[in-house]
Amino acid sequence: MTARTLDPAVTVFVAAVNAGDRGAFFAVLTDDATMSDDGTDYGLAPWAEREIFSADGRMEIETVSADGRSLVATYTNSTWGSMRTRWTFTVTDDKISHFETGQEV
Image (cartoon, rainbow, N blue to C red; front, side, top):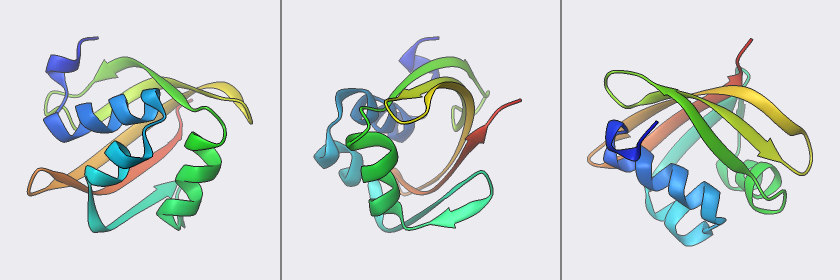
């Protein structure tokens, strides 16, 4: 899957996750961005630190929706190993205002 199929904000999000770049990650989010994981809302900053940055999180994209704002990826981190995950993004004014993730079965 190529980055050209993703919404530009989602492209930045995925690149920031894969680079472990906190600055780029938070820069592509609105100031009041929210998220949920497997249907549970979490504080975005603590979740990102635990699940991405301190756990060396990485996303390998498998499929992307037609609008480029939903994807399925193999997500790997040092806490949970590798799992197939779904990600859905709400983009507002070129920034991500909400994302949902969870295991894809």
